[in-house]
Structures are given as C-alpha cells and as structure tokens.
Image (cartoon, rainbow over all chains, first blue to last red; front, side):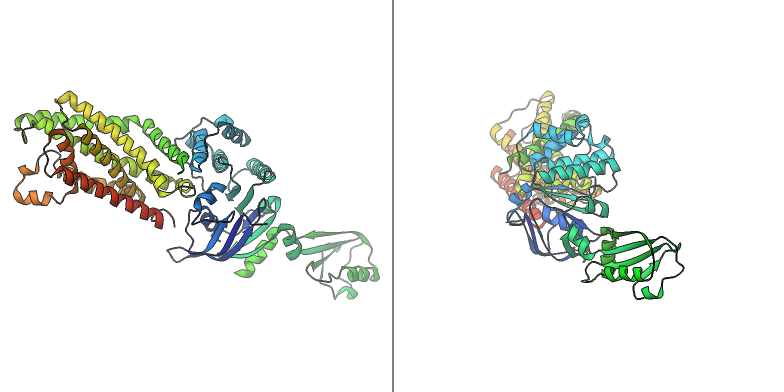
Length: 308
Length: 253
C-alpha cells in the first residue's frame, strides 16, 4: 500500500543554527493513528510544521498521497488538517464563521450542514454565535479542532491536542479520534502524555533531539522492549532468599511474602520454568503468581535516557 | 485558482472594516474635512489661484491622495500583520494558496476599503468646493491603481514588520513626508529651483501630478510619466511580495 505520508532524509536547521531534525525517514500508512512521543524541543512540532507547509525543510523530501509538498502543495494541503499546539485563534470572529473561513481557505465550497454537524460533534453548537475571545481555553481547543476538520481532511495532525485540557475534554477528543479513524482519516498526533499514545495509537514514534529513535507498532513495541515482572506470592513469609534460588535475579519484598523476578521478553529463554521448578524444590508454597508489563512510559524514559 | 479562499479572506477583511466602521471610514473623512476647513477655506481664501485653479479646488486631488496612501498602507499592513501577531497566519501558510491568491484576498479588501474612503472624500469635497473632473476615466484609473499599489506596499510592510513600532515606522517617517512634500498642497513651480529639482526625486509627486491632471488637465509632470511611474511601482511591489512568499521571508522559518 502506498503510504499517505512519506518522509525521506528530512533535516531542518533553523537560522539560529539549531538542528531541529536530523535525517528523518518515516512512512505513515493510510488510516493509521501514529503518536509521536518526545520531550519538549525534541522536534515534533517542526516535523509537523514542515509537512503542513509552515516551516521550510533544509533538505529531504516529503510526499503526501504521492505528491511532493513543495511542488504540488495545492494537492497535499487540501488533504491535510492541522490542530496547532498553541491556542492561536482570532479575536472578534464568531465560532461558526471561523470554521467556514477555514473550509473556504482549503478551497471547499461553503457547506452549512457540515459545519453544523462539526459544531454539534464538538459540543460547540450552543456557542456558534459566540465571539472567539470570549471562549474558555477548552472551548478554543475544540474550535481549533473544528477548523482543522472543516474541509474534511484525509490526514489530520494534532499537535499536543490535549495539553492543558481537562479529563472530560481529553476523553471527548479520544472518542473523536476513534470516530475519525473509523471514517478512514489518518491521524498523526504529538504528545508527551504516554497515556494518550497507549490509549489511541496504532504505532508509536519516539523522537528526541531531532532524531527519530524508533517507530513501532504500539503492541509490538511494548512486547519487544518491555521487560516483564513476575511476582510470586508466598503463603509463609521467609527471611532470606534460599541458597538454591541465588542464581536467579530475585528480590524479596520487605514483608518476606513476595519474590519478584525481572525477565526480558526479548530473550529466547525467560527462565520462568526453571525458576518455578527451583521454587518447588526449595519447598516454598505459593499463594498466587502474577506478571506485569512495563508501560510505554517506562520504555520511553529508558530510550530517551539511553540516548542522552 | 482557489476562488473560495480568495472570497473568504476578502469577506473576512471587509467584515473587519464593518466591525470598526468609525475608525475605518469616519476618521479619515473627518480629518479630510478639517484639512478643507483649514487649507481650503481659512488659508485658501488668502492664496491666489494656482495654475488658474482656485486653491480650495487645487488641493482636492492631493488631499484624496494623502488619505488614499495612508489608508491603503495602514489597512493592508495591519490586515496581514495581525494574523502574524496572533499566530493565526499558520492557517494561511498551510492552506492550498499561491502568493497571488493571498494577495488578491488581503490586498483586494484593503484596496476596496481605500477606494470607498477615496470616493467618500471626493463626495465630501463636493460640499466645500465646485469640483469638475475633466477626465473621469483617468481619475478612476489613477484612484484604483493607487489603492492597489499602496495596499500592496502596505502588505509588504505588514510582512516585514515584527512589532507594532515597525508597522508605523514607514507610514510615519517615509510616506507622510513624501506626500506632504509631493505637491499635495502646492504646485512644485511655487518652490525655489533647488527644491523643485529635489522634488522630482519624490515618487509621490508623479502620483499626485497624474491624479491632478485628470481633474484640471494641469500637472507637474506629463500624465504618461505619472502613469508609468505608478505601474512601475506596482510591478516592483508585486515582485517583492512574490519573492517574500517564495523565500518565506518573515513568514516561514
């Protein structure tokens, strides 16, 4: 399948000398949700801004739907919707007018029904005649999303969509993203909320210091990189780890009732079977066992720390 | 052509004018009326006719040009500077728009507004003096060309400026002196020979002279040269805007 967005050897150095992006290569498939994770200043916004036409690349190419963003910008920009990170809105326009304005900018004929549907979907219908500057931060964020969707884009960029918004709006937004995915819209979102990426993304890209450290299927990534923890609960507390279990990297909980075993799913042998046999031989009686996997956040922190 | 985009930009800019009607229309009209009272009636009554035209009538084209130039520049510069200031320029930059379409929307609206103001000032002048226009077609042509050219110039200033001070700098320090010294209120023949020579380096002189010619068939320079001058300035401004959008100067990082 032809990627909807294809980035090849993309670099960006600002006039200040700051190298914001270093040789980025990335293909984004139609209909997927890609979350770009990275700390502040990692280059996420620069990457999005280049694809949308707001920042000029220093070198490399980007195509959207097979068309170059430089030479065929009309086609590529018609397909793209962008929700910027900052609450950049006019002051005196009405909510409904600003959505109609954005639709027109992207070359689409006025469509009152579509705008009405969007306003209702975003819980903005009651505010349709309000002046932008009178809206709360959360409402402004909804308006920005409405503007980005006003021209029915096929690719939607959400730059930190839930930064500084309340839980209700965040959940609303996730529901909206799911609805858009069902309608076939490709979504690229930047975030530093790991929870957000875990919740809605199909693939996760980790970016730091202008470098794309990895892009992986979210589940595969967690499977591949995530270390797991096996907790063995004992019926009777023990004072120390028995000699026969010293070869395993075990830790004993303070109350002496839990043996904790760290293992790596990437290893061919996890050592669980022999551990269980050894525990049995040591005469320990089990009350329960359970495993837990490290979160995307742990993976992210590990990767970024390793790089720095 | 992305006509829908041109249309929404134009309408949004005209709506901005409607929202600030008093500042946009009433203010330039009132200040022009004050010029008529002071220069036309109070001082003009003591000045002999200039090139067989009574002084009150003679200053009408200059006064129209004074308002037209300052209004065109201020409307167009603010029109594009404000989205830069608030950050909403991202929408224009990420829309499927060529530089020409952006210009048609913003500069078209600014020029329309200036044209409305110019027409109102001319009508207002009719209340103070008996105005006869010898070449109405040329008068209209100069009026429209000036509105477009100086709106384009204002657009350039709006892109160039990165603070409100810079936005006011060129209109205040360059345009206003050039208009006042470009024969708005006098014919260059009335100046000493040295100042006459210096005045011919002032581009606004050619503009006012051509416009005045369309009213009274008198001008400081031949009308053809006036027309060529404004067309040349229009072409230069267009080339600069094209370059700004091509290179992303002060627009794209």
